[in-house]
Length: 68
Ligand SMILES: [Cu+2]
Image (cartoon, rainbow, N blue to C red; front, side, top):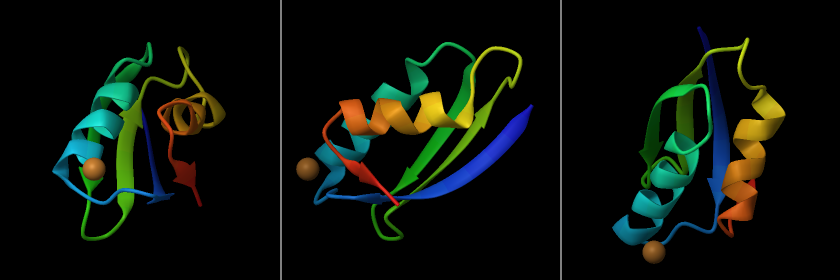
């Protein structure tokens, strides 16, 4: 299991947090996703035989937010 943390731009409320969390959890191989509105950050644990960091980040971008 691999854990990554990255910044997310564009989240303004708990609805955004929910959207991002669901987008991350829908990625095959993602075990858990913790999204913090206050820190503008996500911590994601995933099976690195099933997905890659780029795919995890892309899910956030596809949901309409920017990663940094
Ligand atoms: Cu929002």
